[in-house]
Image (cartoon, rainbow, N blue to C red; front, side, top):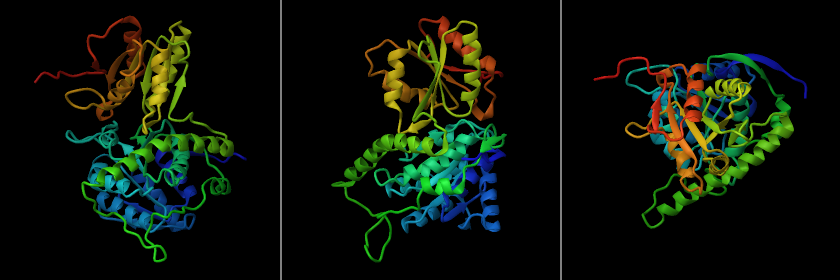
Length: 394
């Protein structure tokens, strides 16, 4: 396959991936730092390079409602949002997963008010972790494009039939330009056939969609939804293997480990900060420190098998996240420790919260985290906020 290289932002990479996936309808409402995605898709529809209907709706709630309508008639839907927009969608986000509509949505991770900030942390999507959507967090623009294509194949698989959220760190990734390889349309078409489903309105096979149930059978529907999410794990691996065969790139499934085999301390990450951590790992390795990195790609379905294997291999694990559940700890840390609690090992873990409101997480911050992990046999503080630079006394 000949390489078609482009120099684009993360937002533009998403739009190019969507064009390659050939959705029937794009329901769009602008919000920083997502707006460039739907602007580029509007350009593609206007110039004829994407044969789709472009719906400029009046709110994020309407954008998701429209996407559900599209999916309900058996068509392929795409939308995108960020931050307060995602929260405005929340009612419909749950509705879409319960109805088993395989909508693909890009979310530009951005802080939640108040205080207002247009810059990125991950509290928006992690706040909807229990909404029944598959959630992937990408590291760079190439992964963003590739995951849009994979997302449709995974979400639309009949064993899954579950909506899919592709998360990009706001500004750090959405607005940063980097080179990507743009796949050939024919190769994508061969990999991702047009959407076919029985879960749709049909005159030939009429059925009820989005119905009510009584307490006698509601739980069974939720159980079926839960099992579909669990089944998506092997579909994710199958699709990734097919993707690697067709496109020559692999993202290692639900997690990606780096230099963990003999590590004494490993730092777990989510999203674009992974690249910075990888650089620090290499620097510390050159100085003789046995450290490693575990990148969590999927928060739902959660990679419990991979996290369990890490906990059996490493004695100290830090979880670095741009999120906090106020009054307790970070949500990623909670999920990781849920796995560790079932292991017959003595793995020690600590939560490092940083990057809230878009604050930089520097190489020095990461180096300090690794030194904290390496130099302490026990942690008096379970949660540490890194990079604090102002007086927080009330």
